[in-house]
Length: 185
Image (cartoon, rainbow, N blue to C red; front, top):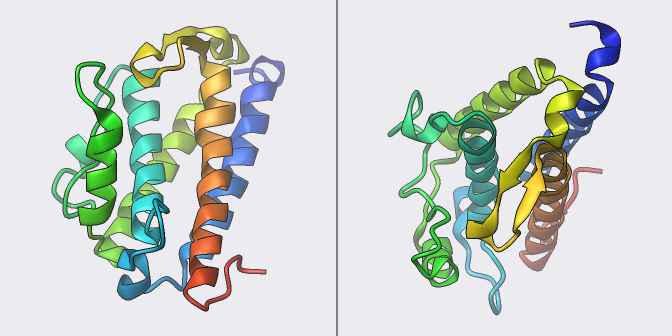
């Protein structure tokens, strides 16, 4: 692919690499106890926030963008380090109630989950490396998630890059509530 054919996708790829780096550095000192510690109100436990982001990226890149099978249901089935997978989008179910139950139940084997996360990030990077800018305008039906029709570029910006930073901030704050340093800097 010529340089000019994927300039925007290359930029997004760099943004996502930075987001992955910050997320992984932020969770690098998280222990099992910290990952599963209950927080006040409806705040996500650290492990649930981390798992939600990574499995969401896996699903978006492999299912939503490519029409394939996510790593957690394919090559990494049974090896993600998760006690159970999060609920998927389904307009016929109460996703919010299912998700609220899942965040309180899920447990992570952190070393196994970190290996799975690396595999997800590598797969995302490979996908973006081959993505021409013209693919960014392809429409996607996100009505099952309450977002109507959006395009690939919107999902990359919002649900991958933005979502990573949102959960990174959430995890950093949760670490602070547990008396730990949040961000790695």
